[in-house]
Amino acid sequence: MSTVSLEEIDRSSKKLVILTLISGTLALLFVCVGIGTPKWESSYVNTTDGSYALSNTANFFYTCSFTKGVFNNCTSRTEYLKGYSRYSISFPWARDYNSHLQSAAGLCTMAILILALSLVVTLVILIHSLFAWTNLASPVLFFITCLLMTAGLAEGSRCLLFNDYSANLYQTGYLLSIFSLFISAFVTGRIHFFRKQEEENLMKTKLIRK
Image (cartoon, rainbow, N blue to C red; front, side, top):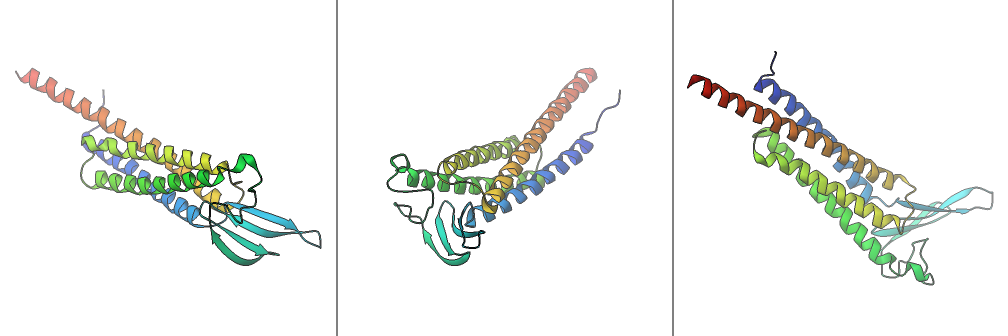
């Protein structure tokens, strides 16, 4: 019966760790661009010639106004959500919109920080050791990242209609983070399994020698 050497296991695991780093880095890039650009929700108005023109864009932090598609200005989010097209102070069900947007902004930003930390930990694992207990830190951090992203998107969707590229970029980063989580968890389990197998083989060898 053929066996896989520890060196081969190391090589394969490192390739998967590199894949995790690549997908995680892409995820970080997408979510940073997504959270920093204004087009999570875009609103349009009818024009005199029967077409549509951009009138407003919004994200969790600020809103931008346009006149017939021409940019006017951007305004930071205030308690009264001035410029947010789906909000009106007269809507009794919308009085907590600002708190939802604050929560969404905080959760999504925290997710970015944890994602960056996940990549640093994964890089350390790749450079130093694939067998330390710290291997568990990588999938755990990716898991926390995905939870925060899920919560942030859920909170934000209560106030904004995700219909433009900024939201699409962040959601793409979210999917890549989930992929990174799966690969990281698989690698951790793989390393743990083969490490245990190696220890058992060493124990058997010692018993035979005795």
